[in-house]
Image 1 (cartoon, rainbow, N blue to C red):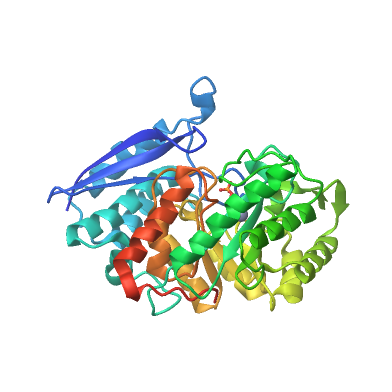
Image 2: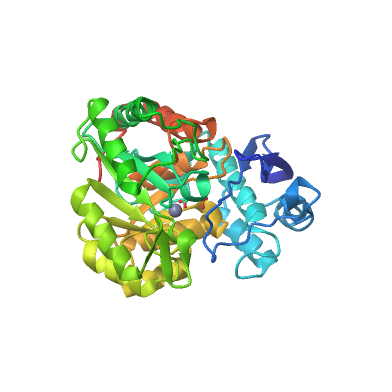
Length: 424
Ligand code: PGA
Ligand code: ZN
């Protein structure tokens, strides 16, 4: 049973306040969880409650979310059974009573939800991923316990860097028929190789918000070419060992019906042509948010054109929301979903969205946010769901490595039971 719930304000990887919660059970177990925060957020995400007092942490403090936990959530939850995550989430949603969690704040609700799951795992003495899978019965993409292929964002642009790249993320996906750790090693070696390639060209090797390099480059194609060179120089074969994934976060450069990219104004169908051209030239595995979150017709034509070849991933498009995903599935927008627990704001709803995705053969990618903490919950979630893919940044910055390191620990504990199926 829950004995106490204590929230506090901590700082995320960008130095912005965020919510952390300690939950203690009657048996004396203490679960702790912290909530991440995005920069290129979808407009339909659940509300991240911030205080807005410009003279205090530039308006970004989360004290109201803390007091919502203390005043409204804790008194109702104390005494409840930690194993009953579903009932606890449902009760928090009821207390909030709004569609987008604007009363309590998604950051308040999610921190508690994560703590409840962790507390259940602690009570049973199980690792979190195992508790999520066996006891909370999260939806799974495979019967095998599977370690995910990492989508590593090694060149940062868009809202995550102050360079000139409009596409927000240039990722590598190692997918050799080897273990998770060997694939991670390939990604890390390629990251170091890219640093050398950039240095030789006198490009900046400073990193952006997700730990990838953030040079200013002549074009997106140049970024892709540099990555190919880096993969080869690291001793791997592009396409065979390591592929490339993009996250355009296109809503960020979509203005007045046009995509303003690389100094040009492109229509939705120009963008579809642009991507099919890239896909024919480069070993591209997935494109996330290639189009604006409300360019629904564009998404349908993009999926018609490229859906058989690559993953088209809806992030801002679906915002981990079951209802929005259901509509997208029906209309054939995309074939894959990015899953961010704080976009929807509770674990139970995240699981419902995952179930809908898996039932419809949508690939789910478990994802971090650009503003992160050392909390590695999503690493356990990726293994619990056997999602096959995780997106959690580059090979630098502890906020990103915390997740990869947790996956290494899980792999070690699983031993020969740790399946790595490469890409599905
Ligand atoms: P965000 O970006 O966390 O800044 O929203 C990540 C993404 O777009 O995938
Ligand atoms: Zn995205």
